[in-house]
Image 1 (tube, rainbow, N blue to C red):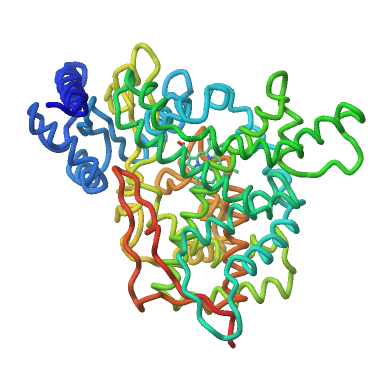
Image 2: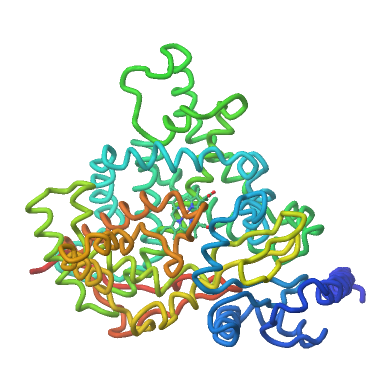
Length: 513
Ligand code: HEM
């Protein structure tokens, strides 16, 4: 017992058991079924098992309870968590107002951004509004820059020569491309090509995710202390201020001199932020933190989605040629534009299908019940004040009630559905509107990669534009194959998060035919 570490672990274990015992005996939730055991020690074992095996546990709950409709609970180290299943209840969760089921408080539970990034971002997320409005509205106008950056970034990052195959780790490679393309719109040239700036954004994102996930393992009252010990955001923040600060200072000073609509003002995210930022937020450090946070929301998610798509493509190489033909035909008729992307139905379908099967985890739409009286679903289930709930997204995507042969990768299933709806147009104009429901950007109660309802990802319009343009570019300019034929690198699982294999590789070369 000389090592003080053991004392700390001992105290933590006692606190955990005591907290767990209290949570376990909450009579208000007695009627909500449990997945796993209900005894004190056996539940505790399940709670530890959740860290290693959450997707399987959630799938079991989904299969066992309520015929895929309703709520069940799972034991975590310090509390129960509530898993919501079925279209009706998912819709109700997605529609609930912030003062009843809180998105912001839910995020803090799983990734305590308030502790990792700072209160200003969590408590005043005005940049979400900027993403939803100015950013999305400008996607058509900014498409030439997106396209230009994709061409240059693929050239510079892949660096394939002649007819040789080059084997590259997909996640870091695509993270480098996504970081560059996204920052072309966030901060513009030349900074979006500055390697230190880009690497710093990627580092910030990784630091935030890693520290956030570790802090979230502790009970709420312990988290500020743990955050102080392990958070390493300050270094990447200082680097970002050094590199991005002069650009922001320049914009602020031009606005002071010439007013908000000064000639040749860049059409980028910094400018759109400045249209809304007020008071303290109109300073270099505050704006740098907004850009870093937007990078955080954009880079990890989009590069993981694209990595999964490439793993799917090399595992199912038969999709390469039809997508190549589609892109060539569309570009011949419409050129490269945002509107042309809308005609790339197969590319869209392929990415949507990849997202369906490779959602970022077993759960999505984390919400904390903040209404004092709790939250009541229409089936009568009441979640108590303070409870954390989420939707069983992976199980929903793998449910045969929702999809034909749900475990099968069917890259053009959504293109097919859209074609069928179009064919029905004359007979039933209302049904034909469903084509919009099967696009990559469309959320639904049975399609949850971007969540659904009030907080559905506002960045999905940009993400879809970026990822579709990247995939279209890749299939017409490169050949791609698996490192080992027919083998998809296994996913990495941490708790209920499922990420593409971080070291998984594929082979690229310049297109040969
Ligand atoms: C493939 C890429 C992406 C995926 C899979 C994704 C997924 C998600 C999900 C699941 C949510 C939470 C939805 C909920 O809880 O109801 C979310 C929220 C959010 N995402 Fe994304 N996202 C992606 C790309 C982006 C990009 C590129 C941006 C920014 C440009 C962005 C900005 C945001 C923001 C600001 C929120 C919070 C929304 C709110 O406060 O209501 N995301 N995203």
